[in-house]
Length: 488
Image 1: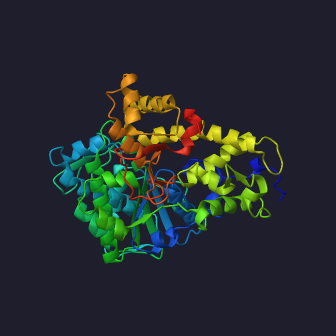
Image 2: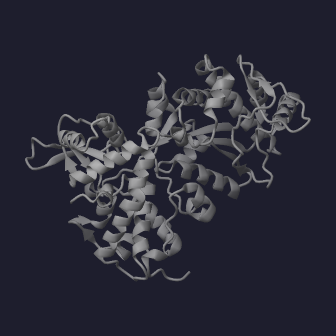
């Protein structure tokens, strides 16, 4: 392996974990840092809900489990299912719009059990105590065309998705029916929910079967966000996992969900589920307090895959400090302490490094930060606001921030500027709350015990912190400063 002499020769990864799994799969195997102990818990434990902010690595968890299953074909079947283009409106209408909320769990259970049974059917080592029922149900499922076959023979894969099409009707046994696209001439099956449940109870195998649900974020971009449908999904996943454990069925459904989306779901049992059934991806560490920096560990782990001789990428290629802070801390302050933010920041610096060997000069690092702010961080914040704030309103608020030309200001100053710019129709309080939830802004308050010092609150540092617009100041996240052109 040739010695790495330039920072841009290091492969750090992609912004999208699905792309990374395709282009650099080893980064999600040997370069995967399981700092939260997720692998063992999701495979062997009872927790099934993975929560975290956008960019915290939820999809990376799914792709890691899939790649591990591919490398060990005797242990685990993994089915990845992306719900990004799931037709929630059609789903609601098929269940009966007047009573959809109470039927959502049953409808979801039908679809999830069908997908899981299709996975069971691919397991040559599997057995079922009621083989007649199992064969009847899996054969009928195959005829619906809803659940994908694995044509390449792999044990893991991504199905075509859970789709509804207008042709033929299947009774669910929950007072509703779904419609499917059938193969020409295929007989219409009758598959009630109870049949699917009974078919899973007697299944036994030496292999584990995981169904991983991703893409819930994309529902926010749909014209009508169906929080009640997602709450029904959450309930169905919990109920089925309990049934699998009780029946000792070697199966588990894993649900990946953004924390702020989970918090908006209408359910009286969310906190109980968070405490008992969830793992939370929280990467925030404070090296200034002597804490281990897991994001630094992740980058160094991936750097050693490019060159095992590089012990610390930050000491080998970057200035020792900037702005009076150690380099690692200075970089972390430009992120919300997520793997995506941090890796994209370093990737942007790589893009400005050219063919320089050894330590990069400060001006190159600053140029990379400017690119990161404009090309990554600002667009990432726009994406996070999608579904909560209209695009035109987002641009109006960014324009107000740029016009203030300062990284900290009071809410009153912002409102006064909005009036002068004829943007007083904006619901600024609601937009500021949403920006605070995704850590695009923070709240700062003067400390009474230390004159001249401030208590600065960001959601990514303290998930329980709240925004107070009446007191203190609004502080723009440092990742926005260069992109907005505000003064330091």
